[in-house]
Length: 322
Ligand code: NAD
View: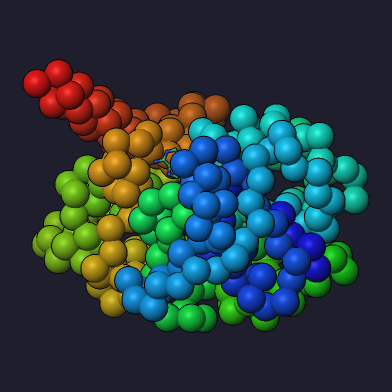
């Protein structure tokens, strides 16, 4: 199958390189110049697994404007706030036959993708795996091969033949895909998870294990889960898990599966890049407003993350001017 990955960052490289390893024809499109130039200069991307076995993997990487490929499936792995620009710059290659697959965090991407792809061609989901971009052309896949999982669903909630073919390729590449027929429930499960763990760990610059070791962690999680579920229920989203199961999942991932992991939002904050908080906690706030429900804790946390971003920016300017 032919895949083109849009957004050659941490997750774009992970999906693209592993699908390429599994025998697919894969190309990449990216806009970050240092990344594109580095890959061209070194002849590929350096890939490590859990900080070890760093090796060069040849990849074909293009700027959107110079790309003219016609993949069967586009895979979108940009940050939420980058997507509109990527879509606009790559649109000359899109056509009605192609499928779009994405496992980006947060919400905001679906409506943007639907401006370019038919509902029947859109597959979206969640990736339960961590990947770190060390820098341009250098990526670290966290976790043993085949360790992560992913969920995905058709926007129409009606899997077709192509959906099953895509799932088969994802299986071959060991992404452990789980196909559901509950689109919003699948996406919102991760939004709720991230709205607790990513946001709190980022604010306090702690690992998931450090968060879970705090005696009040369950109480914090419960308050955020309850508000998020209150919003989702009003919006008619059929949640995959009960509130308790969501809390159990947060505890399992934080205590057992990934205690040493800093969530990806923290990685953005620590590199002074904007976070996706507006698309996670902020999304819950906006969805709540639509149904006259005030998700005040999520609103407060969204502000706190922006305050932390703002403070870091100011400190960076102060250091620069010294
Ligand atoms: P990323 O930041 O590594 O890459 C996204 C884009 O940003 C790429 O185009 C990349 O070239 C560019 N980029 C990277 N560093 C940059 C810099 N310093 N300056 C300018 N541009 C830069 O993003 P990601 O971690 O691959 O995330 C993509 C999506 O997947 C997001 O929605 C994220 O929340 C989600 N996600 C990430 C992980 C993870 O562990 N990284 C896990 C699950 C889901």
